[in-house]
Image (cartoon, rainbow, N blue to C red):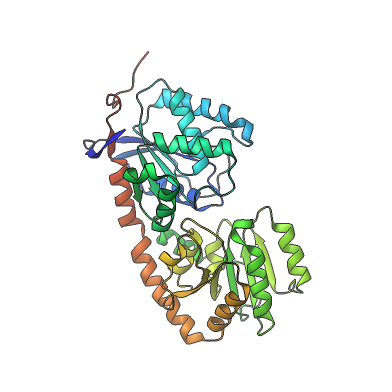
Amino acid sequence: MADEGTAVPAARRRVLFVVDTLSGGGAERFVSTCLAHLDRASFEPHLALLRDEVVYPLPDDVHPVILGKRRWWHFGRAARRLAAWLHEHRPHVVLSALEHCSAITDAALNKATVPRPFWIARTANQPQHGLNWIESSRRQQAYRHADRILANSQGSADAFVRMYPFTRHKLRVIGNPTDFEQIDRMAREPVDLPDADVPTVIAVARLAQQKRPDVLVEAFARVRSQMVARLAICGDGPQRRAVERLVRDRGLADCVVLAGFQPNPYAWMARSDLFVLSSDYEGLPNALIEAQGLGLPAVSTSCPSGPSEIIEDGVTGILVPCGNAARMAEAVLALLQDTDRRRAFGQAARQRIRQQYGVGPLLSELCALLRERTTSGPPHDERKTT
């Protein structure tokens, strides 16, 4: 394990990020941003993907290794491939960006016959939701072996320590660095959204139980009964058909746009009036950060964790109880019907979020973490030759 505060001398460090894909999620966006902004004078970034899916920007100097895990029974194959890569390239640091990626990383590190790199296991969500005992055991072992645990919000860190109290001494909290310059450029791109004069509520979320799209649609049905408005949902997932049925059953087919996964949701956000998040739990919702950074007021569930750290209730948005469509509808109506308040919330959100989640300060914190070193085994600045 690593000694607290031990720093490595200034040198170019090989850093491997392990994530499932580079498409469609907050952890994936986090990795894409880190790959783009890490100082190449100090770091040599590498990438391992469980699946060959790349939508988010990937720098020209990063060539991902594909581990080939699409089903649970591919776990061993992915671990062997990662172990082989570790043996060949010998990174100084490994950062596994999602919980299941940490389990694979742990197995690979146990197989690899090289000096152990400094390992950061990132947790991106509330722990232990929907796990079987095998996956739970694998994750617990991974967290015991990791040198640092990285959480993206204080709420998720607190929940993590309650679940895994032995990690308290090695837990760090660093928010998701967000590239607002790139977001601003993408927000200016055209998007085909008809009836520009109709007030538009937007959600950017995977259509899955965690995100509670049912609550979102039920809340919007109440809004629509009071005023003309549109709901746009950018995202796809296993509950898409159920959402389509609910939209039809509530008579909302003419005012709900199910846009599917959008590689550029920012163009949609820029043409919307209000952002809504209806999740039962989160880690630190990137889409909420991005929307508020673009100047959108927000209505969000006060779920564990993240939204209450992002939204200043009554100043940049409104927090409502989880699973309560009526309260969500009231908050949405209150902002859609009050242009001045909505504009003031949006301006305050833009200023607050860009200061809190901009790339510069958060990436500096992450780079300091990447420069720490483990004392388990000799330094390996020079690759072994055979």
